[in-house]
Length: 207
Image (tube, rainbow, N blue to C red; front, side):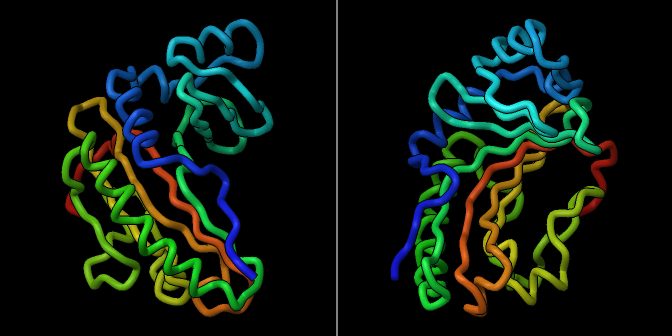
């Protein structure tokens, strides 16, 4: 019995480095999306200091500091890009009996990575756990969680979001997602922390 690591195992300082590297990104160009694989794609990635790794349905890239981002677009196409995700930390259970240890590890990891993110992004617009009465299942027209699944599976387990600072800036969401069955020790579970950048909502209405 025991725990395994997640998709990526990035330190809080490495998260800070990746977030700082995105500070000057031209987000409208990002959302417009990359060209198809070839020299054009290589050049498009190079402007961000990225190297393309995978081209199937989504574009996966490696940064010059060793991180990996996943660029997703509707319908498995290449453009327009509707999210850029960076997997940061994770823990998995070898058996269902290890699931409480997974949740404990997530509880310890969250404040450390949140502090790292805040050092670059500032204080979040909202931050809390799956059980919060004011949990933002929907923000400015974007779904962040399904209320029923959240309450039943405790997923997302933790979440913080930052509204765009400028007219072209992204909505930034950091969360810990739990695999189905983790909360109730039904199967060997997992927890993964990621940071996702999404286009600025057209209507910045009430949360």
